[in-house]
Length: 611
Image (tube, rainbow, N blue to C red; front, side, top):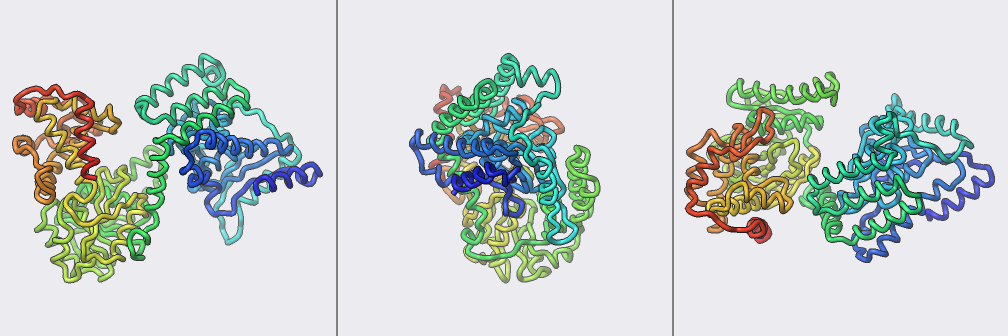
């Protein structure tokens, strides 16, 4: 069908009936979100996958061979093949909309852009800017795309009345100015002599490539081949003919497409996309909450409130003292005002977000909430009291959720007259950055209540995971045994820095002791006995370690500025906290000779066994 359309286009162009071609999408807020990975996923033969890339390149080359100017009108998401189609056009224009996102995310799937992305992008916007998009698999907004030269024009798209078609009228006017013009263009990505040196000289390109490779080593640690192949293909393209560049790009695409890394990353992507189908996951419909209540104005509760406000939800925060509420509201205000200071948001928009959040000491503010999250301290008796009180003042359809990380949802639900309303919605700290949210159901939980909790997590841009009520749920059950094994290794004399270094070398974003600092040493110590009681001997921890943490309440991790490591006022990691580490080492009877590989195996294998 694609080839038939282009054959007809060429006929019309030859007959002088067409003087400009505009590529547009009939979908609202979306241009092309990428190629069909379902076709690639089962393929394992490198040559077959190479041929897929070659076919894509040939298809987009047909756009360049039409003989008249071509315009790509981007009204929304233009990722992967959508971006590459635009790169093949003579001009690109975009709507001035937050929905517009233009980029090449292929490396996130273990691939590289295979239909001309690494061949064309650098010649348009310069090598440095191209690598900023290609290597992390990134995307840019319409305004950023205009700034770096990725698009030629950004047109308004807001409409004062139905069917005004503001954007499309501007696209039409722009197209009229390009009728019968040359179908080829010369791009000028070099705005300064420095740009010229780095983008257009062999030495400059080598320097850019060297620094990019260093960044990849830090980010990917050599374990993900995709970004390295993408870097080589992009560097090669700036000094080669289009034919040679496309040949190398297709060859690399073939190698990557059949790799185990790519298959695993595509599988992960498909699971993440599948998480959006809440009806299949929950067995119910639920509702999308409009107003959310939060019990507890501490760090966790306030962070949840910020995220809700960002997504346009009304929030009521309640705590036992007004000074606690005021502190939580101040955190909300400061978060949005910081975005204003960094020019990421206007003051008017920040004020509108801040106004969505209110608070007080009365429970009456929960009366019209669709969902309430309890984020109080981890004491079952306190949580039961809170839930009994909430049940009396809320609508029967309101979901009563707890953010507990370790306590039984089933036991908590038992105090309610209607236990079907109780569900766990467990966020991870820091709330704004951690993508996962556990949605926990107990035997009495209604399917629609689970679905509402799930839809709420999706609304906040999170990846919800449903699990049954059990000690540790999913994440803490996995992390608990992982961190527990790290503690055993340290108590056996492996040395805390050596254990962390071994797991960093394996590919973890941080070592287990650095992770404990992030979680909070007191929180980890509190969860450990709960896991042991519910799951058995394999979770048993050394009592000397637990006593050490209890005896040093000034060292609770990042939140107190010191744990196993030190942190500045902005939370940036410093050196080892030698005082606490020395105390830990004093409990060790002898030094271990365990290798890095042995440490990796012990910590990773317990995760796999538990999963």
